[in-house]
Amino acid sequence: MTTSSVHPVDQLLPAPKLFTLGLQHVLVMYAGAVAVPLIVGRALKLDPADVAFLISADLFVCGLATLIQSLGATQWFGIKLPVMMGVTFAAVAPMVAMANAEGGAAGAQKIFGAIIAAGLISILIAPLVSRLLRFFPPVVTGTIILVIGVSLMRIGINWIFGNPVGPTAPMIVDPAHADWLKAAAAMPGVPPMPEKLAVAATMQNTAYAPLGNMAVSAVVLVSILLIARFGRGFVANISVLLGIVIGAVLAVAIGAMSFGKVAEAEWFGLITPFHFGMPSFDPVMIVTMVLVMIVVMIESTGMFLALADMTGKRVTQPMLSAGLRTDGLGTLIGGIFNTFPYTSFSQNVGLVGVTGIKSRFVCVAGGLILIVLGLVPKMGALVESVPTMVLGGAGLVMFGMVAATGVRILASVNFAGNRNNLFIVAVSLGFGMIPLVAPQFRMWMPHAIHPLIESGILLASIAAVALNAFFNGASGSADEAKAAAAMADH
Image (spheres, rainbow, N blue to C red):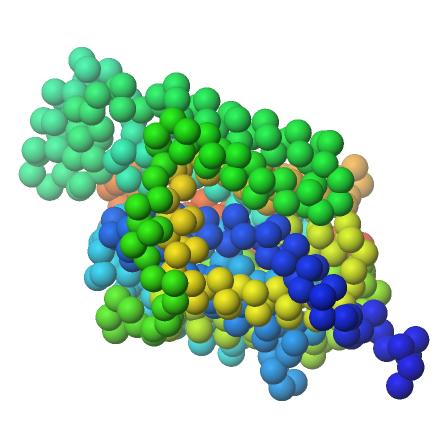
């Protein structure tokens, strides 16, 4: 078979080139890949060694999921496009809510149990989801991804200003109100939220937003922007990683970061399943995670279609089902190996467009590199040692890119000819902001449903789908229904 008869997606490049380009993909996704285990591990109040293990497990499963998705495993799994798989940020808010309810190993067991169950269910419903695209036109998917990015911004901001009382920034309460909050917390029948406020009220304001943290985060952010603006090629593509490295060097110089844990870590370590014990299965948590996985699969569909356009490779219905099924398989494997739900990484999709390299074997090489990195505990310990103030500046860029992806999708929506689309975006965005602006709105509601309504992403998803069906009908607007039909014919 001649080279010209092989589609660029299926071309096998020379090994040195594969390694270099695969490493580039890893470097582009690395900061985003390790962010979720850092967030969830610290929300669970795990020991630093366990957080480092989460990072290693995440990198290991990132590699496995990437191999399955890009290389393919039978006709049922793998879309066989240049896809890098990583932990989805859509699951962060629900998992943090679960960690708030119960920390430590017990909380980890419930989170991983929900992830395993959601992975299994996702494998089963993937073909169905691939046929339900008429309910998720661009006005819905763009709104959902926008809300994901905006919701995650809170995490990046908390990294900058400090996070001394949990995964949300402390409320700086007027001392005049502190006694009232303490009294409220002591009242019979009052749920835990006022107690949390009372704790926040007794904190020293100086523990929040120190100038040193803001300065380091600002250096990281400015470095990323300068490298992205003036860097070329490979250097510009790894601007986020280079910014984190610059911030880490600065943190070491001011004594805010040390390498003691790195020196103690082993050079090699196996990633063992059920590290925190056998998982437990909570029905509400499982439902929450399944809803997240539906959002993940819709987001992945958009990424797959974008890759199809960039590579010139037609995505058929069986291919799309295989790709979405792999999201579920990766999530199932993630739950078993103590990590999280997986999806295609949007920054790597963009990298395919920037480099023009369409070969899926580049991502296969990237997956192998990730597996190797996951088996080196020193790498996990090194990442865990990076202070959150260093990650703050990068977080604004990474999470902002997710929001920008939603904006880009919404740019293709017909707002001038169909004013109802404005209502869909406006009201859904409002629903998504409720947990961010008024996190105590659920304080008088049953605690069993808190994980379900904690995430603005889920609230926005439900609102967007319902409003689109109300205004545009089940199949969306005429133009969007036509586009969906054209995709189904491929």
